[in-house]
Length: 511
Image (cartoon, rainbow, N blue to C red):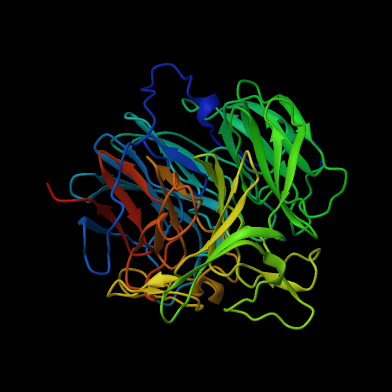
């Protein structure tokens, strides 16, 4: 790919925080589709929007949106599509950035960002609204992944706006980047002026979710649909100047995909390989040298629940390949393999956490069979390599009863009941079609995981074993089968903010 075509310009927290004259207090939570560990000591762990339990207020939204929620002072910032015409196209290149009063849930002001290429609304793999806003007390930066970003002051006055070229039409609208990176190179943007400060030395695939860590920004290359960035591998980028710290280039191209949140800490950088044998990859964070590659789909501890009795069964050091699949039985000669669900991974508490795709057959390198364990959360001990899986309920009904081991579907309508989704894949549960669920968020000692059904799992990341004691709560963002969400939560001052396609909700206990 020629160096002369830097296509997208996205602000980075590291490179943009030096503009003079700005309040440099960033939001307590910028929210996923990228991954963030929220610097909040605690947040509610149990609630129900369907039963209006522990809900402080509800704010109807004009349309769906997939980005995270920025919380600063007395303001909340998020993006949606504009209101959907009843018989209009369910695609749009227009995004609304909203400022919302934290105390009441009232929308204070909204501003439009119109980009170039239109995306499907509520697309299961991201859309024009997928990039989260970032904010300080004085400014907010909204992004439309169709090709525009803008800075506004607290009162909605526009400070600057700039356009960027979006990806070509032959690529699906899968823009997993957040306000940190996108194809073909990572760009740092001066948040005061919108000018490009630097362009990364190495390219970055647009499916990739770069994440800033102690050693730099981890970016990646590789994935489906003939992404052009080469060589396949990972690079650690210096946030000061965009220079390469190190690059890891596998000796073969078998199953290396940059479709995950690329986490690193002071010691290690992490990746998954979806080859003939699926594995967890650990690199030295300072050098990029391979430390270990741990199989995910061979031997592990597995916890399953009987869907009729809800009785758990723990299988210790089980052979994953030969486990019977209660949801999608294996045919003769097939085996179960593990395919971590793209973008659902997060490193916290000494473990690399991820969801497992269910019945997915996209891994063309794997032996005949399909992926699992069905509807499960996995984790790998980053030091010992111990692998564990725990089956999760697909959702909870309006009475709060968990539903295990059954594929579900959901409605995709707005607050007025108008259909807004462009395609039927968005009406599934997102596990079998491996939708790009929002990346989990850690608040205190709890991991919050949201799925397309509006189901939110809360997991204790300090649990010694991944079993029923680790699953703190299973919550809803609306009635099961009538709720849709591809956004993650944010927290501030003991209140959790989350949303579905119809509304933003404040979750907490009345004082």
